[in-house]
Image (cartoon, rainbow, N blue to C red; front, side, top):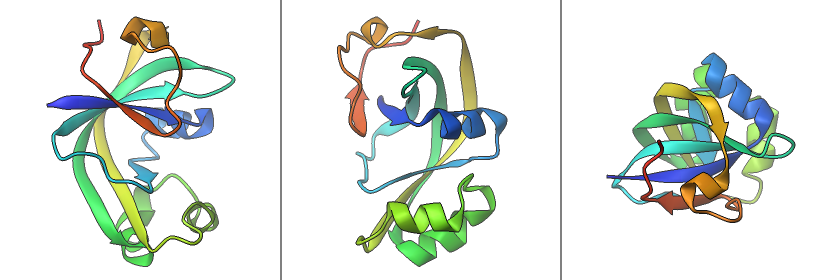
Length: 127
C-alpha cells in the first residue's frame, strides 16, 4: 500500500484536524492501492502537517456524492458546486484516524522539491 501527498488549503486542513471535515473531495480518482493521505497545508503554512487513513472512496454523480457526504463534508454546498462546476463526476475520500504531526515537516523531508498541484504518490516513509 502506498500513500498520496495532497495539497490542501489551511482552512480545510483545520477542519480535518478538528474532525468536522471527514471527506476530501477531488476531481480525479487515485489508484486503488492507496491507504493513506499525507496532508500538505498550502500557503501560508506550506508544511506537511498530518496524515489520515482512507476508509472509502466514493465516486459518482455530483449530487449523489453530496447526498452521501454532506453531513461531514466540512464545506458548504455552494463551495462544493463551485468546485465541481462543469464536471459530471465527483470523488470523495472518506478519511479517519487523522494524526497531526508533533512537528510539521517540509517537503524536502519527503524528498520532494515542489508541492503537488493536486496530489502525488509517495513511497517514502514519514519519520
